[in-house]
Image (cartoon, rainbow, N blue to C red; front, side, top):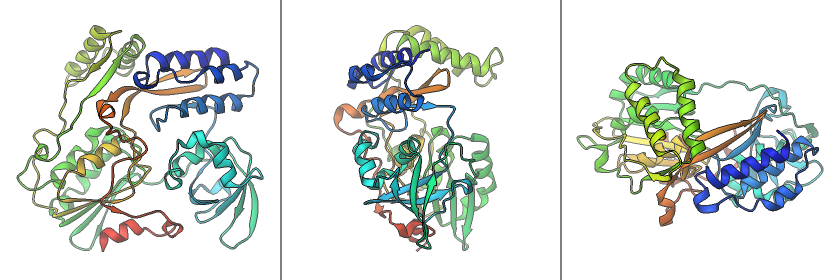
Length: 410
């Protein structure tokens, strides 16, 4: 497909299939379309499409990426005119604590202003998660290392990820258990983690669950924790009552894609225990194909779960990188009187969810197909996130020191 064809198809999807269409239609696409030529530079095309989609103000669940590009291999947090490196792969030439003070010869503030659409009016504290998407369009950064030496470093987009343990637990003293959940994706590994720490879970007086940077996955991955986090003898539903349902966009494209995805995943060998659910999903999308937005039947995933005595206190550590099912986890936990939420508000991207993916050769578009009706009542989470009980602002002191965990342990 040509660049023009790809962009026109994206506009059509935003107009008809994305759950954002009810609020924004296809957006202001004409100016972007006028700038596209089929012979333009690939990175220029990528930048233009990402800028167009950024105008919808949807983080996480709406994106356009080039699958031939890797990652820049480091993450940053901004304070005024400086980007502080908080994580870095070895091949980037950076280490946590390095300060980026220039980008291709321009100041950090100048680049932030030039690329303001990418940041969606977020505060500088909540910009960190967006800077990697901006920096990949630039060539060099000016860095002041921790020994105060200055260096110009090339930005690479094929950094080799250094794997960190995503799920683990640790005991502090006799009565405190710490659990780290980097996401809610790998159900088998998460289930094994729960099994490995079950004795500690059953007996601890205090529980700390760390979901900083948790990019989401499946809500079902955190359900086993709920009984530990709500008061003894009370159903979770005594405290947590979702106020509004979601509505799902049953456009023709979305329904066909959902049915095809199920066929790709299961083929003709649907596990017996999953067959009723899969068959219902196929029938549901077949029956409603082309009917547009339909309010989803309530599926109370926390029904029947009763709280227990231990632990007596629960702390959830979160930040602006906690998103999607991570948002949902923190929101559910915030209703429990046993729980204290610590850190900074979550990313807040569940207003539009249940994403679909379309490939255009090596480009990939991800867009949401469901919409939370809370938006209509001014209660959306976008750019606010789930609030915390004890706010701990980010500062350079956080580099090399876990201030949030220290607070919980204290």
